[in-house]
Image (cartoon, rainbow, N blue to C red; front, side, top):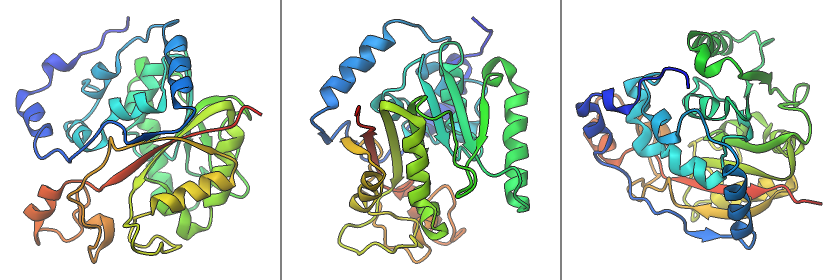
Length: 298
């Protein structure tokens, strides 16, 4: 096993902070008809191999910044990835990993027995923000080869670039708080179709997104950053996916979803600066739905 500093060396003050003000959560609200069979299949496959590091070790490992670790309380990475069925031997595609918050957990976990594809921004883009983000992501990978040397980067930029992994190769595709960006760009349908193509029959799509108020009609451009759960489900179903299960792992009942500045009013962005800062810190990060879809076997 590669040398790796584990959670005992994380400062106690940081761990205490990470446990404060956690949003109201529940393990799982509803499971579809196929959920039991899917869980059994995952357990059977997982028993065959052992990861280099456990998810518990990775989410608080020394390769993660204190700021990233502090967000575990809102993003619940272990519970979320276990709900999606992540295994040490999974072939995983993450859509737009941005700075690599989830890369830090998934890529080392599947490094030895599986594969991690980072379906990132277009390297041919002329936008400086995109180029800077890609440089930072590559620098992260190069800094810790014992964790990230087997990461494979692909480009996702519809309509020209949509092959995020070899067709029919992935066990799991995951996307975290991205749909609200695809909607104003008009790329949501193309990206759902790309994710469907990348998955094996029976493969899983895991989705986390800021959950909108179902009593408020969905803005097709998602300018508030919130997406109604049923609206997202309909997008996935148009591409051919079948909803398998829902979870309340990432729910936050304190989120009122009615802020003038949209979801970015809340942490970590805190768009209003010092104005009502303590109020928004007390609310915490957004209420999020967590959905598991299956690509049908046929």
